[in-house]
Image 1 (cartoon, rainbow, N blue to C red):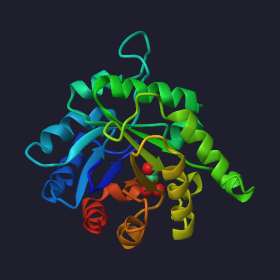
Image 2: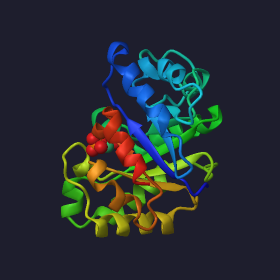
Image 3: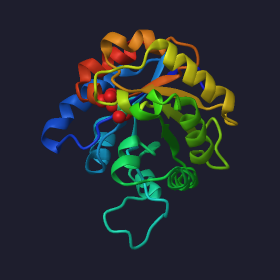
Length: 239
Ligand code: PGA
């Protein structure tokens, strides 16, 4: 595991060929020893982003993959396919996949295993809902998701854990520094794999420095703020 902070942008279902190239090319200047940058655009843009980023240190990633390498799975994309078009990373188990596609931690572990088999780094997302936190169950929920979502064969080289409290995603509500410190220490302690641990949930230029320098925070997973190159670069430069 390198000491550089990992800055990952998740565009979710945003971006067209016509409006993405300038945003992506603006990131080419971002190469720095203090951070590594990964851009996860929608599957339709992964290959084009790889072309636009050629010659830079910025890597590309998918936002999800199927657990099988190929087959009759209409609408899905495999880890092998992402690797084939130049990806180095793939996000698995994002809360939006768990919520809207009913993915379980067991499903997530299978996807992460497929990512590893394809030679991709799996960014495995875990995090509690508002209801679970209010009920005082955040630690239990995160511990269970961690235990069930990280497959055998995970190493610090092929795995990144992203802690994303569901109530902080896209809401503008950021977890307090004490909450982040507490959960990241728990993940570090409980995880058999000494992987990088990212925080995600309403990270922006103005709060990135504070979050990125907390103990056990090895980087950030950024949604909305990664759609603006200037904002995303401001986050990275806080590393
Ligand atoms: P957000 O999303 O930065 O827009 O809160 C984070 C994520 O979903 O990864």
